Length: 196
Image (tube, rainbow, N blue to C red; front, top):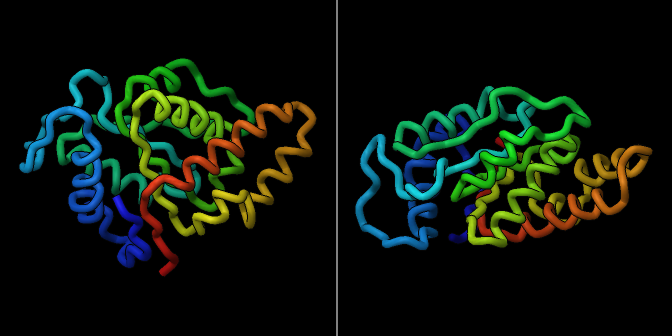
């Protein structure tokens, strides 16, 4: 799947995921492929509890982009996991969320401006990247953030890591895991949504 630079209409995520994203997910299947789209209310990875797991910073995108994307995926019949509540800073990801990641075949990671400010998002990302090493597929969406900021932890991502490194309760090993996961995820083929 090649990168698409500049999806202009932020008011139309349903069309976005019905076309490019759905095709990309179907092409990424390791099971038998079909030229037809999956019918509504059916799934293409029955061995997993969820077809798609959405990773995102709720404060940035929950009520706009992510909500539209989630509803569009569900309408197309994809079993899609979305967390019900925003975790507070420093709160540990609960076991149910980790289990949902393990039980998902595909991951859509929505990198927004403040994604790296959230320790829970970063821990979630580390788990997702562990799953991709075992055969899962991840697709990043760079939502109003430059992919190079994610890769190099510069700009807003650099500011977030400066704050993390000043926190006494965080170990360097954990911070390095976050950095590695961000760098690896940023290099995956995905989508870059520019500012309007």
